[in-house]
Image (cartoon, rainbow, N blue to C red; front, side, top):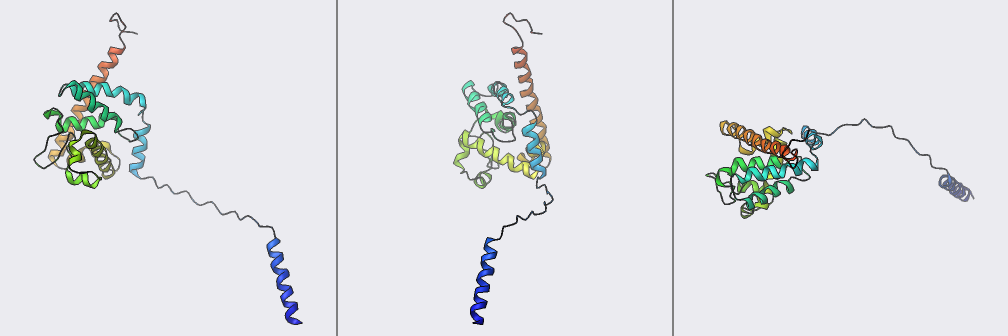
Length: 215
């Protein structure tokens, strides 16, 4: 009899627990910890600082015109288009990729068949070992489109090393030491050439059909 009474008591207790209303427990809010790295902050800054689609498009004809001083009009157009398409969705502008191409192979008519004494290949002169680290083959570097993709990935890796400093990242693209310092100075000169062409195009757009500047 005692066992039956205990058994019935247990059943009643379980039934009461199952039917009891569930109280929602409010967890204390945890302190928000920002995991944003210096690189993340710089990428956000670069992507928010006037880097609109309109500005990207405006850079393309200026880049094409600067490229045309070194190679054929057709090739200039193709490479300028790559600078635009391959930097979409990145913190880089088309001019960033164009500067590197000009610095690396501008003196060789922006040829994709150039090989440096150290073994760097393609328009953007990437080392085969670096290409492989990004999932590309040595042969890919001789294909302009693939080489542009590798160059963007390589520049991004340098941006990580530089804690988001784009100028330093471009310097690291070349390496370190006096040679890299000279490379960065060259990059800055080339940026000035692209910007000058961009300003010239803006001035041209500001002229009416009679050649009078629109005020």
